[in-house]
Length: 279
Image (tube, rainbow, N blue to C red; front, side, top):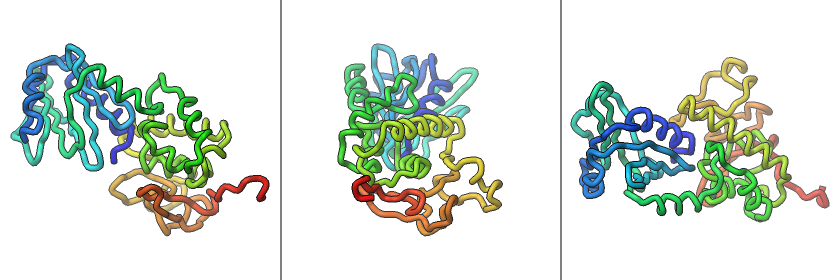
């Protein structure tokens, strides 16, 4: 599933391509035809993201609310729009001196909503590390009182918005925290380090369009190793590296299932939490 940096990058691309311009709005598959007709020819005000949600704004406080889900894509491309290819649920087009178009495929959600509905969605989300006004203490209050594993809490969009399986695995490795450690056992400084790490890593993801989490001393060039080959791209420590040696200590990376999602960790760098009374 696309993580928060993908949606932030997409919002920026839509704003740059269509912001302030009159756009043609259509639904080649017909699944969004009625709402598309109400927006067709209107000025696109701008686009914004919150966590894994995308909001494209039109006049009169109307918003396209899009959630890409597991396989959704919203491709923004320059040039006049060709005939639609495949299952295109929504198409945006802008003509004139800088023609552009955008095709939405495979999304789990594409709705025309009011400002009130958008605000309701936002109210249900935890703080987003990519939003300047985000308050990490809101997430900390939930985490510090919870018996749930931190690996579960980081994927709860009501606790923390925008983090997916890749960033979850990587920030826990970088913080030397086992994914099954109960949230209430974390110290405030450990949570703040996770938050600051997410802010930095996700902003870099927006800039590059990929997830890179390894420190300079663990890059392919620094270690003399081949670059990672994976559909998700980017250099990572543990995500989808089951059985491969940890880049720090050479211990084999492990995996298990937590709430129907795979977790990845190094058993040496991320030791299980033990209360002091048992140590």
